[in-house]
Image (cartoon, rainbow, N blue to C red; front, side, top):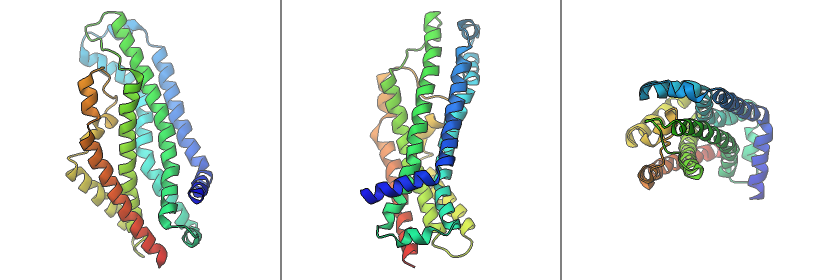
Amino acid sequence: MKQFFALYVKELKAHKVLFLFVLLLIAGMNVYGLLKMANISQEQIVAQEQLGIILKFVLFVMLPINLAKSILVLSLPFLLAHIFNSEWQSETHYQMFALPVPQYTVVLAKVAAVASIGFVGGGIVIGCVYLSMAKVADWLVDVGSVFAVERMPFFDFAFIASLMLVTYMIFIFGVVIGMVGVKFSVKRYRRLAAIASFVVFLSFSLFALQGLSVFASFLMPMLPFSHNIGLISIETSVTPYFSIILTGIIFMILGVVMYEKRAEI
């Protein structure tokens, strides 16, 4: 555990500038989004007569927060791939291979470093999405709008969003590590091998897991917000999350095995 923690800290220090940039970008866009929400009056919300127009108006106002969420989701796999690539480009991977620790410890330390960014950034996004949607829900309730929705308790909302975030990170990290394992197992055309393996892994997952429907709320501008016990039970159903997590773990094991084989050469 001490060796793992030392490697984890090393990865954080080595890429602290990039990590801080991503977190500051996410935080800045969320703060801007909340300030934008604060400048909207109840009259502007209620003035929209149709539900579709209300939703479009709300989504437009929440655009910075939604962009921050997209940046978080899309940046995580690229950050993990960047850590591996930078190590090989600087030719320090031989030193990592020579360490008296299992290679899976080295890989997991890199995953943990990027996962830390995911958790911090995810916490910022989840909190800001809830605050913005709660504000809209309160507006509609206060004016007695027919489109009023009941505010979901924060812990229910945070639980569902966190479950989706963790599931997504395990899956996408598995795909990236599988890609890295293939990439560094070949001596030529590594970039082509990386792109091909990433597409194959992702395509297989999309087919096997029926389009990863559990991530629909991640890709949509907002998570379900109505406080409905049935909805919460559906969103937290074990089966889809288990399948996606298992797929990510399988890809991760495959990538680690191939990476260890490369280390032995």
